[in-house]
Image (cartoon, rainbow, N blue to C red; front, side, top):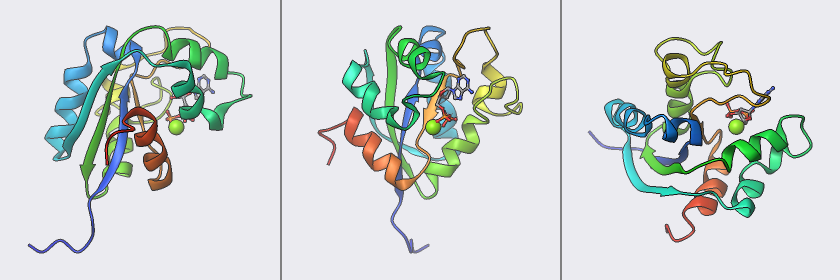
Length: 145
Ligand code: DAT
Ligand code: MG
């Protein structure tokens, strides 16, 4: 079959809650089972400047400070995934932002819950547009072409 469009890339994070709970493999398994390709993978402690860039759109919101604190609370796993439609496709795998509302069958719905904190701990991040993906891939994998 001839491919008519270029595959796109998305930036996925397994957040500190997911990493700490040993769910990195399960998240990556779902990505690969869906058919997307892993093109970069890293386990890292997020630097403050990376989090400031990554979550710039949320600066000033009530959950911003707890969000940055949460994302700094332990190691996370970062991945670049590739495949046609993988930006909305991974968002569908992830499910709704609120893990209580996220549907069973999704990562957040199957594996996440409300822990009573001031920020939602919802296991994964996925880019929400081609522009966000390009920006976020550059934040976490500056050496990736
Ligand atoms: P998403 O991660 O689904 O793209 P987002 O970009 O709107 O969601 O928010 C970034 C993260 O901030 C989200 O994963 C969890 C947290 N968050 C968002 N809205 C929140 C809220 N109203 N209360 C607490 N945490 C929230
Ligand atoms: Mg978002």
